[in-house]
Amino acid sequence: MPSCRRLWLNPLALLLCSFGVFSAISSASASAATLPDKTLVFCSEGSPAGFDSAQYTTGLEFSAASYTAYNRLVEFEHGGTKVEPGLAESWEISPDGLTYTFHLRHGVKFHTTSFFKPTREFNADDVMLTFERMFDPNNAFRTAYPVQFPYFKDMGLDKSIAKIEKLDPYTVRFTMKTVNAPFLSELAMPFASILSAEYVDQLMKAGKASDINLFPVGTGPFIFVSYTKDATIRFDGNPDYWKPGVVRLGKLIFSITPDAAVREQKLKKNECQVMSYPRPQAIAGLESDPDIQVLHQVGFNLGFLGYNTTHKPLDKVEVRQALDMAINKKAIIESVYEGSGQPATNPMPPTQWSYNKTLKDAPYDPAKAKDMLAKAGFPDGFEITLWAMPVQRPYNPNARLMAEMIQADWEKIGVHAKIVTYEWGEYIKRAHAGEHDTILIGWTGDNGDPDNWLGVLLGCASVNGSNFSKWCYQPFEDLIQKGRTTTDIAARTDFYMQAQVIFKQQVPFTPIAHSTVYQPMRKNVTGFKIDPFGPTQFWNVGFK
Image (cartoon, rainbow, N blue to C red; front, side, top):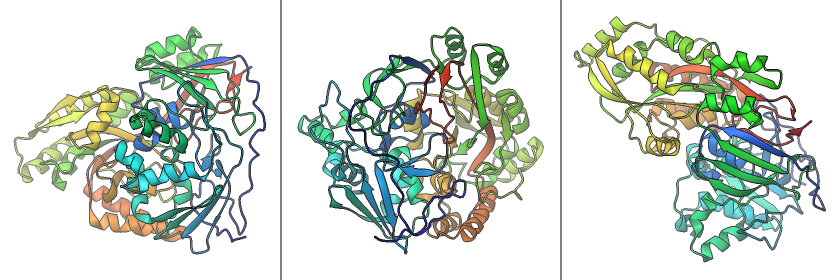
């Protein structure tokens, strides 16, 4: 059997790979489980734009699809960062790090729904369809439903993968052009959720390829039933789920409730049993309620203000430096986060390995900022748009208030900012297209690797994706590419430390804060764990 070379992909949770293969967690269950007649209602913060994980980058869609209806070849452990077997029960990595061979799990069933009845179990055809769709521009499904795959492109997988092969019905091999240190962790991310090739074929024959985004079919713990936009998403527990004990609910309902105060009231009245993103000022009251428990942990996240460097005058580094210097970050953290935020300096959180502790913010100095604008050719300032998110995110509890405070700060230096917002799905779509001048946005780490911050948020390959600053700066890019194509942790750390220095000099975005994540729920809810990467999961969740 080929050897499995140890790759130090994620020092937060070292992968258990040392000249052997990963053992299977369990075999697929031979018969359907009897699920408890229990319904859990989750008060979520917004409507997902769709259920096709490959085309999205936000936790809202991942919660509503990726971790309910789908699985991936490999998974992150429940509530943790370690990579473990998923639909692949074992794998080998060649000594040169260029070949990944996955041995697929037998006996895994796709969902039976009102709109699809599978005639076979999961196999290599499903893996091939899932990845060839993103990899091959001429793939028939991609042609029939032409959408963007931002994560796949942002992480350079379209360039680093040489070929994908089906070796037999239960073996798939990925061959890389160059070493891609985070690759295995990347395969555990939502964009890599495995689709049913049989279901896709059915949609293609019916001329309804886009229905993959409306009616998901996967192998995951919950089966999609229905979606009413701005109201509810309904799932049934999957009695045939391949991993025993994970599904502890008969039904799961997402009650879409954009207003945090309303979510809090619904939780108190037991109209929902779990809620997303409480207001910072409401935490103490929730914690004092005898029927409610509030889990919390330091967030692996970053809220920031992005500058569209393709728009004048934001293409000038002096202008970006002046806008950055004019923002009273301390006041924002006090008013917006209300004790649940920590000041951010770098383009990643301090808990991320390779974080550069030597970097400091420019001091808040409106007078100097105004002088810098004058020297840059704007003594009278200018007009600009400032986009504010319409929904709460883990990294920003109140984007509207933050935007108003930044607007007031910039007014002091003669910059007149017009606040703009859209419905969440439209907001992200337009931001990817680069319509904004400046934008409030943020990120929660997806896989524990620095490349997920520096490469995805600031790399040249992602300027039409999650690089909302549209910033492509070659000295920075060279360091990111070097970090991505070596597995030596010391060397990678050095490259990323240097890249952060360049970031701080060039200011493609202003880091604002890292937010503590709070997860309120009824006290009778059991098994819930906060996902360090942001989405809300209901694996192992049940009731006392």
